[in-house]
Amino acid sequence: MQSFPFRESCPTCRSGLFVSMPDLYPLARRLLFAMDAESAHHATLSMMRFADTLGILRGLTGAGHASNPVGASAVELMGLSFPNRVGLAAGLDKTGSAVHAFGELGFGHVEIGTITPRPQPGNEKPRLFRLKEHEAIINRMGFNNPGIEGMLENLAHSRKDFNGVLGINIGKNFDTPNEEAIRDYLICFEGVYAAADYVTANLSSPNTKGLRDLQNAETCGDLIRQLQAKRVELQAAQGGKYVPIVIKIAPDLSDEAVIALAGVFNETGIDGVITTNTTIEREAVAGHSLAGEAGGLSGAPLTTKSTAVLRLLRQEMNATIPIIGSGGVMSADDAKAKFDAGAALVQVYTGLVYKGPRLVTEIAGLPGKQLTANS
Ligand SMILES: Cc1cc2nc3c(=O)[nH]c(=O)nc-3n(C[C@H](O)[C@H](O)[C@H](O)COP(=O)(O)O)c2cc1C
Image (cartoon, rainbow, N blue to C red; front, side, top):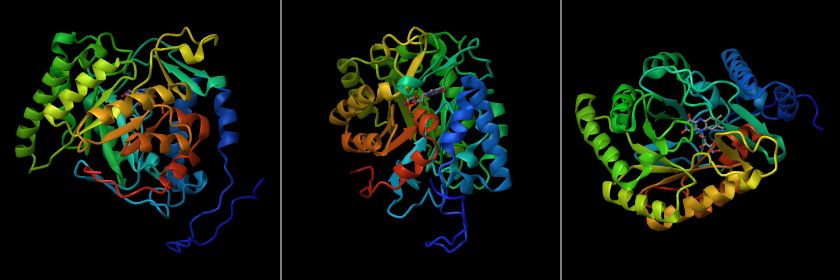
C-alpha cells in the first residue's frame, strides 16, 4: 500500500500539483456500494462538485495531468480537437451540472443528457440496479432530465473553464408519439446548438417506448436529413458555427440492420456514430437474481457484443466517418480492443462505477497513433 498522498513537483509543468496518490477509490466504492444505486449516484455527483469547487478534485482522484498525459495526443475529429481519446458516456451527467468536474477526472470529452424538449421525471424507482458479480448495471431510468432550458442553466455554471469537448445527447419526451419524434429531435437540436460542440441523437435507449424503432433505415435517414437541413439554417444564423451530428445505436440490431444503417450513414454523410447503448439481452447474466429487471444492461457483459457491432459497422461504413466506442469499457485492454476494431474514441460509464477514475487516466495514456477523420 502506498503512503499518504504527498506533494511533489509535476515533471511536465513543475506546478507542484499532487502527482503521486494512492487510489482512494476502493474505499469510496465500498461506502457508495453500501447505498442504493441511485442515491450513490447523486452522492457521488454532489461530492465531485464540492471537491471541484474547492479545487481539489484532480488531486484527490490522482488524475494529475490526465487530460494530457505523457504520450496522449490530441485527436482531430469532426472538426473538433479532443484532448485525448476517452470520454464520459451519456446518462451519468444527465443534467449537465458536473461538466468541469468530469473534465478534472481527465475526460477529454463529456457527453451530457439525454435531454428532451420538456423536463420529465423518468420511470418509477427503483430503476437502477448493480449486478456486482458481473460488474454490470441494469437501468430503466427513462430519460429523467430537466429539459432543454434547465440543462442550459446548469451548463452556464458547470462548463466554465472546461477545456474538453462537450457533447449534448438528445431524445424525445416519453409522451411524444413516434410519428412526431423527429420534431422533438429538431427542437432539442435547435435549443442546444449554441452550447454544443457536437450533438448526439440517441435512437437506442431501451427505456423509452418505441425509441429503438427510429433506427429503421428509412426513419433514421429522414431524421438525419432533417437535422442536416436545420443545421444549414442554424449555421447561417449563428455566425457559421458547424455542430457535428452523431447517431447512437443499439447493440441488439441484427447484422442486416447494421449494414442497412451503414448505407444510410454513408449516403447522408453523418458526422459520427456511437456504438453502442445498453443491451436488452440477458444471456451473459442469466441466473442472477436481478437479471429479470427490465431495462438496459451495461458493463462487462456488454463488452464483446458491443465491440462486434463496432467492428461490423467499421467494415461497412466509409472510413471518413468516425466511430465512438461505448459499451463495456472496463479496462485499458477493453479500450484497446475498441481502438483495434476501428474506434477513434471510446466512452465510459459502468467502468467508472466499478473501477473508479484511474480507468480514465489509464485509457487516456494509452499510446495511440494520431487519429484523423481519414485514418
Ligand atoms: C444508469 C445509466 C443511464 C444511462 N442513460 C443514458 C442516456 O440518458 N442516454 C444515452 O444515450 N445513454 C445512456 N446510457 C448508456 C451509456 O451512455 C452507455 O452507452 C452504456 O451504458 C454502455 O457503456 P458502459 O458499459 O460503459 O456503461 C445510460 C447508462 C446507464 C448505466
